[in-house]
Length: 302
Length: 335
Image (tube, rainbow over all chains, first blue to last red; front, top):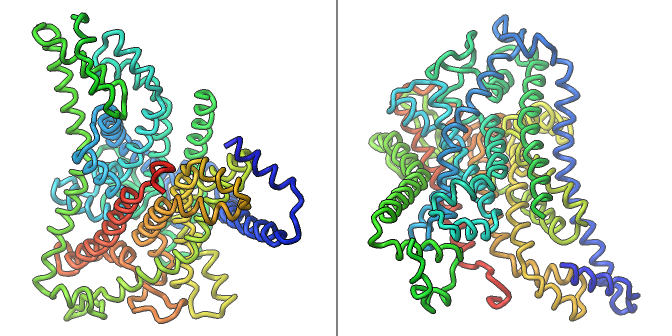
């Protein structure tokens, strides 16, 4: 990388002969387009976030965060939604994290290249590509109806767990890949078995990376709407969940309901902005933590 | 442990064989020497047990995928007792609640295809250009700023983007373009584009970043400008990764639910203009499932719509997998 940068610098320091000046201009114009593309992405994020912050922060106060909705959801707060979303995303992690990390261990530490490995990878890739609404249908048909869980926290967590599984596997595998091979060789060389090596050496070294993946997984699960629409979330329930089989309210579903259903869409606008703001603060906050944490990890590794 | 004969067991074959993980050899060697030693034998059995356990857990993904397919078909196929597959796929009328009901999802399929196509027109150039910018043009420091921005864009919950499209973009479109409703195909496509840009961008960037430096240096040394190098060398060398990225981006767009549910307008008609309200498949499923009587025709029809939607994304993913394996760039030698 360094050498090619030097070559480039050498080329650019050379004054261009008239014959080739057009090529240099062309490059400048094209690169300008690239910069614009990058800026457009940044702007998109900036516009969405600033808009929601500007419109939403007036709705946020202590009552809003600590009270259930009142007067058929036109007043009051969103406490049940916050609790519901937290329960759902933590529940999904309880399911996806052990399975995901174990899958990643198999894929990276045990599996040998071959047809079986390719099949498993194909399965993971395709699971990652399944539309969220199809996860919702699956959760409805399998967990809610077939397993007789009903519309419940459990069914929603399981559905979200299936959805976040590929995310967890991906980041756990990346974390395992970052553990130097010499660690394993040293442990095996001391006479440890493969499992002892994985449990005592590889996993502790990969743990920070795996945790980053778990944080991203929580963020992903917290923001999903379609998978919980038929499996866990309800328009309104005054009580907080007390068991795994309770229905819950959830932030993303609450936004959807307030913004599209009901007769008082305009009247509850400020509640919608407020809920959306709470949701993006939660989701983007989790992602920011993961990004910063990962950047620090990488710096440490270097 | 008997270590004396380890050296003898390491044949030239184990050395020459290309291994992904060099430490595998060590494990395998220790496995062979422990034969006959009872304590070591139980240890080996235990290791094999653990390995088998991990294999079973690792197949959870593929089992889940199979269960998804199984249950979609179980709940979706009964509709074909009422309508033929052809009438279902190509029927233009979707009146699931009238009597007699019409279950033709052609308009929903066309809506999904149209929304995805328009979104791709925006997201492919934007995503690929941002990827090239990140991998080739941006300085190290800018890269460290722009990359997290793209990741955060990917993390924005779809319901928030849908909400934004409803309350900001829709009135804007209505005023600016003087169309009947701001909740239409174009608005949905625009929102979807920004949802698939991060997918396209990050996978393409990996591919572009993975192009061997020798190729780039050779091109620069021949007198090509940086842009000429990107266009004639780097992009062709990473085209399989970029194609995979584009396909996965489109797959994400066609399956995305909340945005099209909130922003697309909801009219089950085959779109004829960019500003028609439409009802893509995911929107139809999400909007109607709550009201559909349990295991009635409507319910079955919605699951069948789910099968079609799943088939689309499954196909996209298979093609992406094929492209990325078939044309994988393993080094300068394969060019």
